[in-house]
Length: 255
Image 1 (cartoon, one colour):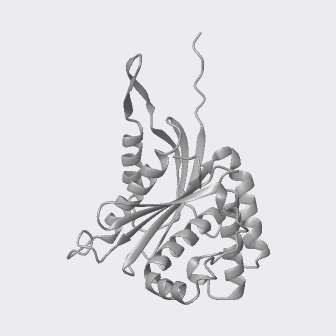
Image 2 (cartoon, one colour):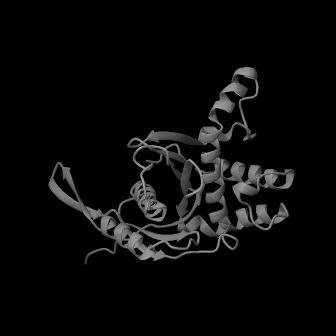
Image 3 (tube, helix red, strand yellow):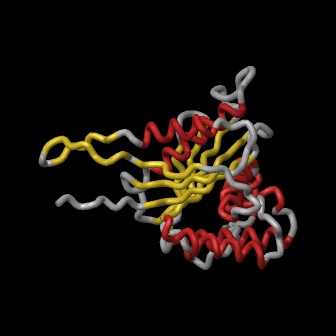
């Protein structure tokens, strides 16, 4: 009797920063195995609640209360990347690049394409055949049915693998079980995605100021005190085609 294939389940929350408003735009996806969702979500919700803020968003990180909340959330995510197999994937693009700076540019359609590329990249770095629950932040005008259809189509493709026993077709890359917009105020992990998107854009916009600060004070290189815990994770900066850059925070042994 044939065995039953147990597919690993994952959950992803997404949000964006500066879409259709500034030079640099970003999308972020925070994902983890579904088995860890309840614990991680509960801890993030507790941090936001005890910081006495209604909703943490990058644009609100302007005073001590929001700053401390953001600092605690970043420290929690970085500390537990390996323990809970977390991934934070961020896609940043420059709207002044020739590939985006075109007359009559459709920012909504551009957003949909970037969302597709980000999620496809993130999901294919998990075990083949994984089942996904995807929760993007609510955003008017997005054709989510088409986005889901494109991701479902590419995820269902079987990959041809060459082995010692001949060429074999592998399981589909991924399967999408849930795809549903959520209100960021009610979903703390969407707020975390917003935080990383905003941080990525800020890093691009203020890079020259950072270089000047680094030159002046080389003894204070860490913006957030993580207690030396970065040894359990890695930061990747994989530049894509021309105007897009992919930034990833994941466990050291992850793909």
